[in-house]
Image (tube, rainbow, N blue to C red; front, side, top):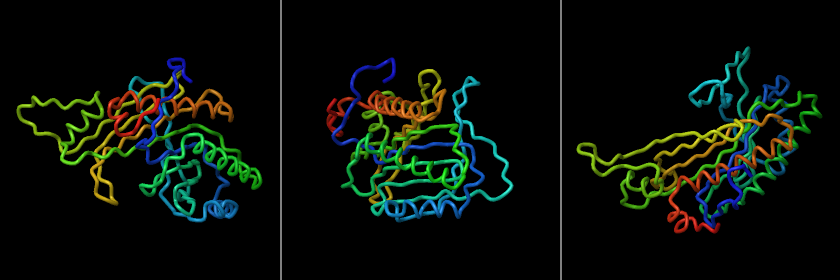
Length: 275
């Protein structure tokens, strides 16, 4: 736990989380070409029988050498077309492994309303098992050992807007730090919303980025508040024990941050807060 807090983490019987993403970014692996990614898929196909091709993600690095906290994209000069980002999915598509030339990600995501969040320990174990398999494959195929330059943990939450509630009123009820005053002389209640902020992690190990926006769920057209909390950074030493400690710290900041940002009565009533 961080120095600031020693109390147990908040816990919810029905958390609104719909996706958790573990991510590692590393220096590009020149030997990792499409045929080898296909060969790796053969080794995990029993657990991840489905695949998709997706556009690659741009590399991001947290910088601390300037006043304004920003996410800095890394500049790359490519001599050939970038490889796609490959998605490998289990039968139900709850678990997703993502691989590209400089990224390895592993997701749990809710596909149906009946899917139950399996909790952090399960998600963490699945990620490190998948990462270990990938590293073992790299060694067996004489691919360079991935040199980590950024870690990332993201929680995505869907918070349905109650029927006939104006978006400004609902946001204020759930997020007490975001207030839409009723005393406006001219502007009506906003029809949409977007809000972003960031917080520095201890010892400049990264930042917690928080974004909130108004959206509609495609499958049922439900008006939803999409709350995304992403911790991004890296410890001073990026060996596995320190990497695991960084993810534990990031999870604590995400969970406690969610608790700080949302109304305590809403936590108890809708998400059944237990601790």
